Length: 191
Image (cartoon, rainbow, N blue to C red; front, side):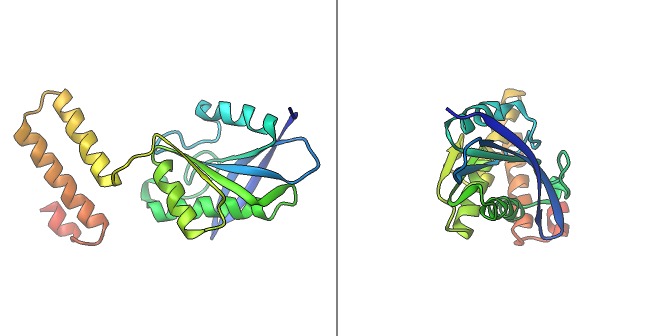
């Protein structure tokens, strides 16, 4: 078991500055590392959801980088305007930051993504094949649009809406999804 050190760090993705904390074991050898990929909520590195990772993994020889997601905490940018591609690029920038450090084994850096992070992590790994592993927690086996459609239908049903109203809401969500994919204009969706 190793003692744990923590270091506040900064890395860049294009012009955006990201703030994070690197937790690492106190040992002289380059160690493997994992970058935390946030779910849709809880975008700050201080979220208590990560305590088990930052307290246990470094004790067993693995560094953990938790950063404030785009537009959260001390990181720049706007999460509400970011697409999955943007978020994946932020994760890649975090991995590249770690690869440049002599105390990290650049060939053994992976990703730990929860929920939405379970979608973002594979996108980042597909773009950067030297990412060594992915841990996907509460990841989904369907597309983001399908999961959101299910969530909307489930919650509307819980609130007592009838099936025709639920179907109309899903139809509107489909149009919004088409807009985000560049398949429909803003005017078409608004109409």
